[in-house]
Amino acid sequence: MSLAFASLPAVQPAGGAHGDFVVNGPAKHGFGLGKVNAFPVTLASTVAMFAALSGRGRAKRSRLPRNESRPTTVVTSPPGKSYKDLTSSPAETYKTLVQASIELKSQSWQKTLVASMMGGAYVGMACLLSFVLGGNMFSQHMAQMVAFAAAFPCKLNLLLILQSGGQLFSGNSATMAMGVLEKKVTIKDLVRNWSITYAGNMLGCLLVGLAANYSGILTGGAMNMIVTNVVKKCSGAFGPTLVKGVMCNWLICLAVWLCTMAKGLGGKMIGAWFPISMFVAIGFEHSVTNMFILPAGLLAGAPVSIFDMLLKNLIPVTIGNAIAGALVVAVSMSFSFGRLGKQKTQQLSP
Image (cartoon, rainbow, N blue to C red; front, top):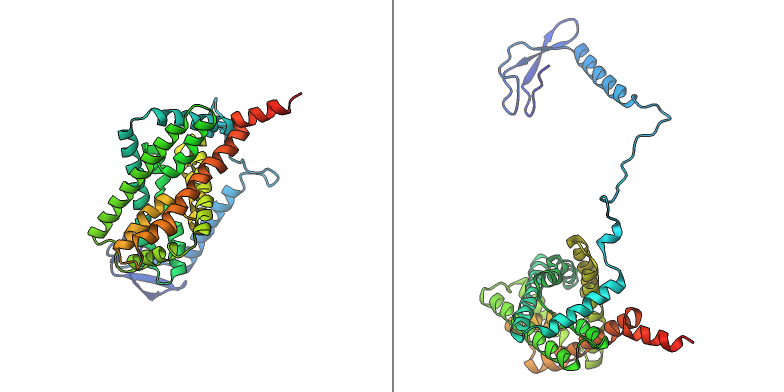
């Protein structure tokens, strides 16, 4: 039996014992019968068709006995592999980061500078996306911040940095400190890497901010949102801002830890997503992020001075980020998986 879809032709009663109908005119759209002058469709034939279809469905469902359950799909790991192959152990992750500190120590300053500039540029582009979305989609500041928190990790700037060889001062604050604690890297190497990556991150963020201002991207709601954020960031006291920097980089270094632990790209995406979402949603302070936000807001007309940006935000946030990376994360990880913990065990052993 042919069926007509979309618009159906008009039907008129044609009389008869069973209440027949006759289709007049062609189907105008879709797959149809074309021009049909007399196509009888009886009520009895319609009922028979539905009965036949329902009977076929019951027959298919009745192939399995009632007391026999349907087979379930069991997800198994590939042959020769287990789900533990998706991530490294915490001890293996710590060793990987210590080895990374050795590689960073031996890297030329030119390569470190370029890698850190790219890292700052990725952070700047992620911030730019968040302000454009949050500022232009919503008018209320709270709704803007929710959109900011949702969009910031959407770019997965940390994933771009780690997978492309970029560097961040905030992440290297823990990585290089781990190398120092394991006596693989000297204090001089740490200061050298921190200085170059900080300068490179600043240059990358400034370039993205200048490009956004020149191209007119930070206008309208995005401009209002970034100006509001800059004023808020430069209105806090030194101590609370420093503590916000500590809490922020604690989460960022854990995001680096999770990305290093994961062996697949999907796991790295998850590892980067949630810690960054946490620090943005809570309102912690990240030095590299502020390297973009503060100059871009100043260019957009924020009523703050360069002195305010440095003394009331960037300096305390940088100190807090360094404390979190070197002391909170690196020391705790070395005590759990590295040399500090082994020394304590040897002292306690009889």
